[in-house]
Length: 122
Image (tube, rainbow, N blue to C red; front, top):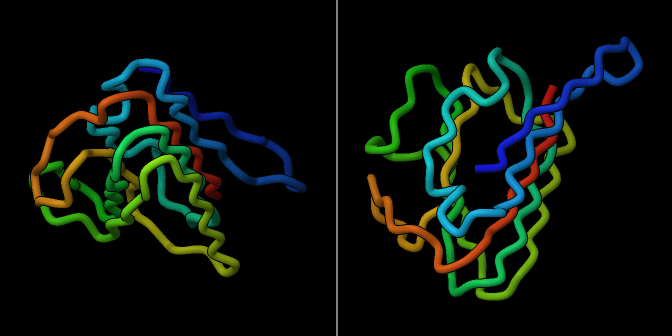
């Protein structure tokens, strides 16, 4: 898996960039729990999907598990790039995510190829 979290430790840019470049076909089907390590706000989501329809599932509460119903479920069309900007930010206690082929709760069906996910948080 190629999950990276980069922080900008300055008063000017108090943001974190979370990236999973999808370098392994199944990399983002791994449940990525509490990726920021602390509470914050989610400001943007960018997903590049070169496969069939996929679902990005996001949890914003502590102790999230992949078998629980996600707080946010976003359908990503086949071959699409989706970008969602949240101007005021969406507050989270712990930010967790996974990408699967189905929208079913607890689905662990891997994408058929690489899916890249990027998020900007505080």
